[in-house]
Amino acid sequence: MDWQWFGATSDLRRWEERSYSVGVEAGPGDGDKRDRHEREVALEMPGPPEADGVARRLADAILRFDVFPPRLLTGVLRRRPVEIGDAVGLQYPVVPGLKLFFAARVIDRFEETTDTLWRCGFSYRTLQGHPACGEETFVVEKELATGKVTVALRSWSRPGLWIARMTYPIMRTLQVRAARAALDHLERLAKPDAPLATSELLARRNLRTSLL
Image (cartoon, rainbow, N blue to C red; front, side):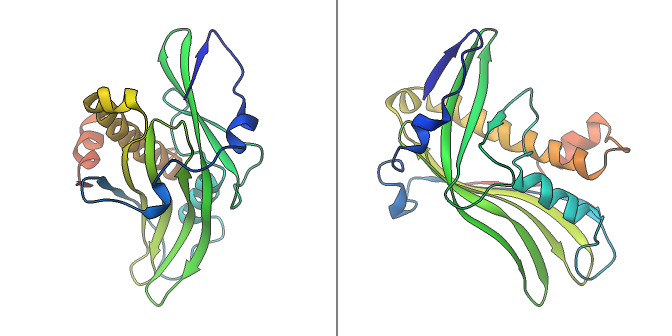
């Protein structure tokens, strides 16, 4: 994790050379957190995604990592859309003049259709120095029979650094806050001309969130 003071430049190159977080390739353990943040954001006509529809628009946003509101997290990438093997950097503002910077590596990018579901997105795995140790998937899904479009962030994680272990309640709060902000951001991309009222946003925010 890099501490960036007063506009320091993010050095993605150093992170591209790093290995995965220690133990992350073995997968989640019994005590690790498993999160599923999901929200239905739109309704299209049944069948495959419409060429200029919400599902395709959200897929494009996810693959270029336009997932979080810029005020909360800023992505740092060498190219968009992401490809397997790419490092994805994240800048997180802590207080005015100070940001944290850390990164993960894309391990999967997919677009697939089953008999009932179309889905598109990618997964990344944390690199050594990331405050968390784990994996996360960002995905948009469309039910072919109903046309329902859902965005989701699904992950497992545990603290990856001693400072994260020491401040884990704070880290956990920030994790959940970021995931819910991502759902809000993606829903706004799905409905740019129809922002939700604050009360409706709050009601939906917890609708399909599973924290284990």
